[in-house]
Length: 255
Ligand code: G3P
Ligand code: MG
Image 1: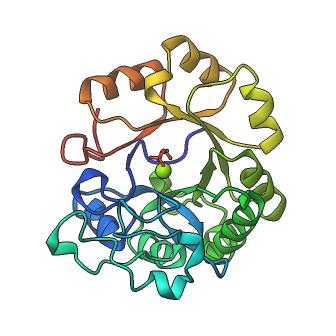
Image 2 (image 1 turned 180 degrees about the vertical axis):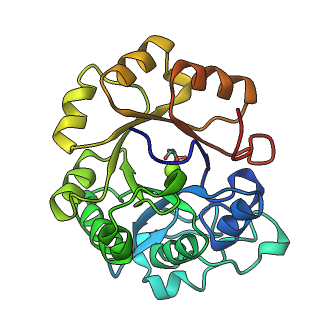
């Protein structure tokens, strides 16, 4: 039901590296993580790039929108120095680069599609098509492998339309529906998306809800769990997996 790892490094390296960069993926790996979550949106030229915010200002200095720059231009912006001088010049990577790094290092991927407003379908299509191409070997051997290490990436999104498009384009790539609080019609939504899992904010989850989702046969994933006591609690409720920023406190074999 949940053939993937249980503990996932949020944005690659949690709070220990500049989020959503190759340095973050290396950091997660160096802490023993073989599972990462990261965020993907489209560049001006329609290439999926790994970035959380649609605007510059937080992880990239200055002003501007990701969507107004090509992937080539984004490869020379500095998405590292906000975090620390040691990361100066760390670029905004493409999804393809991160996928290759993760595949080479046997890291399972939860790819969160974060479309810019108005680009949900386009983003779902581009990410699903690229995932299908980059994961061709895994599709051929139809994972999941041991502890999910050879498994296909799981595409998740708060955007229903992005997921619907991903389903239309590449139904064989699994999908997870992201919500900040579980809505009354959650099961209808998952069924329409053909989603394997519900992803939700741990802050809004109750033991009862966890029980209902698990009893219905879906995977249940929580974001973002940074306190070991809370992590233990929700795992005891039946939550299958969660992502964490505190990869220093909550290791890949945590329980
Ligand atoms: O995918 C789970 C989590 O990353 C969702 O929230 O804002 O951290 O991308 P955010
Ligand atoms: Mg995310």
